[in-house]
Image (cartoon, rainbow, N blue to C red; front, side, top):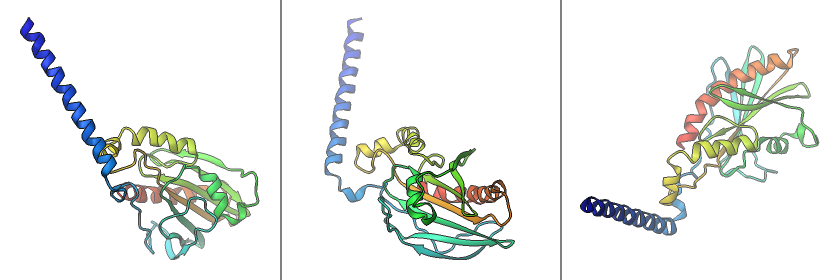
Length: 228
């Protein structure tokens, strides 16, 4: 009986010692690891051409970052498509450290919305895609969302932070953070904004076209964004 007690005590002592050494080692690495080694500050490339099923690409262009409080570290890009005479624009903006609140950013870079104190939009959710906002302004239908590094897309800051709590803290990131290879949260946001003219269609008909394009776009870009 006494021997069993000392065996248990010895195992507990070794476990405590191992934990102390591990924490000390991890802390040492965190304090000495160069900042350039952090993995989550890596960016994603936006190519000149991106295919979209059923749509013909008509060109793309780099767009400026002027007016944004969270400037991008890479050139942002706008892609143009056409199908059955319907033009479609998709704008991509990358943020390396975002709070995930799409609406104020949207109003900053969309000239039609800068002077509007209230933006009448609807927030929708699609299974295996996430949240996105839709609205109509001056006969243009819009859809916008934030692609996250982990988890579904989001539109509000609350949705974005929920993703961070659920998907980042329960992933390998805390371990990478412990050894100085990553921030504990992945605050990157790949902001996507789609728009097309109504052209005698109802807003709901236009939203359906935008949602179809957005679903394919999300499924194509989210895995790339997660790996970057």
